[in-house]
Image 1 (cartoon, rainbow, N blue to C red):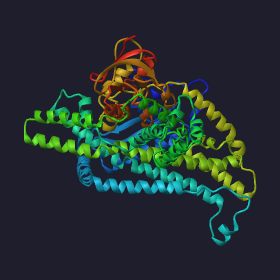
Image 2: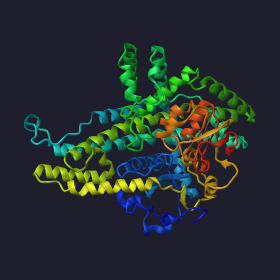
Image 3: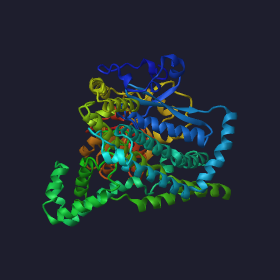
Image 4: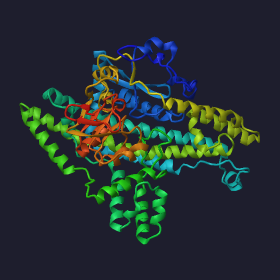
Amino acid sequence: MSDGFLSPFDVETPSGAEGWEEMYPYYLLFDPARRESEENRFWFYNGMHFPEPMPAFDMITAESCYLSIGLYQGRVFSIPNVLGIEHRVVNGYVYITSNEVSDPAEIEKRLQTFLPRIGFYYENWDSLVARWQAEVDRRIEDLAALAVPRLPAIEDEQELIHDHKLGSNYRLMAAYDSALHLYNELNQLHFELLLLAYGAYLTFFQFCQAAFPDIGLQTLGQMIAGYDTTMMQPDDELKALAAKAIELGVDGEFAEGLGHWDVLDALGGSDAGRAWIEELEARKHPWFFMSTGDGFYHHHRAWADDLRLPFAAITGYVAQLRDGAELARPKAQLLAERERIAAEYRELLPGEDERKQFDELLGLCLHVFPHAESHKFFIEHWGTSLFFNKIREVGAVLAENGFFADAEDVFYLDIHEVHEALSDLGLAWAGGAPARGTVYWPPRVARRKEILAALADWTPPPALGVVPDVINDPTVQLLWGVTAERLRAWAGGEDGGGAIDGYAASRGVVEGIARVVRDVNEIGTVQLSEVLVCPVTAPSWAPVFPKISAAVSDIGGMMSHAAIIAREYGMPAVVGTGHATKRIKTGDRVRVDGDNGTVTILD
């Protein structure tokens, strides 16, 4: 143990999860042959994106992202002081570390590549965003259109003989490979512009910290608040549907405790109800391709596939509208405050050159930063939901042929094992022999389900290895809120009295009753004006923000989802606390101080 954190090699396996390692590729495990180097590095738990133990197949979501992050950080933009991100799996949970550059000569060399390349992107931002969108749209269209063939008893004569198509067994494997390729291509595009959006904010942030040493982080956040992003549109559609229900006089059908099928059945019995259903269908595409999580787990289904969350949100919005609540963000107020703060700080600068630089950096930030949120809908929600559904179609073929009891079982194989299973099935189908997978996979799938259930009850430590003196990676600081200072605070433990410290993410001070929510399935329990306390939020949690009075999270930095949305709704938020969900219980009265970054349990 160093600085309060275990060596990754000293983490014990939870009872019942023995053998968890065989679910993951060898290159994602800590290797005893490299123990000295690996345990002397710093690894932190990426609970922001991967809060649950990873089913074997779902590891592609981490691997594909880190392939792209490393490409753009280290090899394309040549960020001077950082390369890419490495990840490992510990008891099914994802830990990451940033590979940083410390040699001044190498930093200077990389800077010479970095500056002209980012200059090109910033100077041509709008045309490059349009290019990016066209490339993303094409992959989404290709995924939606991808055909996954079944294996017939006899091939179709027209297809094979007259049209000269290749065999169904080959086309099945090719469809699987195509789905993987399209998903990886979406993630290659994922980080092309995202890192530059963060970079613009970081540059403005560093300028302000140098010019105004006492400026608060939340003040910096306020200077870019009030923007619109694609990620807000799905929730806006739910608010519009709630308003439509009241307009049509069918709001009485939306009652707490009713399932969405009950509501739809009741609505189908009247002209007004059927008109509302037509409105629902008109608004679904593409906005209901919103994952109920953050787009990294197969079981976080899109709203299009599972209407429970959107209908629960609509029901809540109907009740709030009846009570006269204002559901919209206070955008005009945010914009006015943004202009006021920026003008005040601009006037504090000593000369016109500094003011010109301030204006340019802030203008760039306002222009490019909305992409940091907007891109998520296309990649992590719409594209990833389509991808997982294509894999379900592959799983259905394997299940039809006796490999599994259910198509969903395909997600308990890793991406390489699925290809092996398809090779096994294709050979057996072609040769007329039983596939070995029918006896090989069922017991392994059953065991992996047991392992994941055991791992779900384990609490991953926030970090492993040695805490560095400084963390230079801007993405790590802004998104995860991980700095050497925060890590040392986390290492101090989760017990004890006094205030819980974190990042002052959004201004204001509120006292209220805490509601501890550990995953998206529990957000329906949140009551009006409560304080949300959670490990981390995802964009799918948006419907809860109009109800709450403040937000507190274990994980996250100034650019985390909880921080951004809290600022957009003008409510206090403290993020990156490390242990708030363990110290605070539902029903506790707490004070959330978003000015100073503290949470105090009052009683």
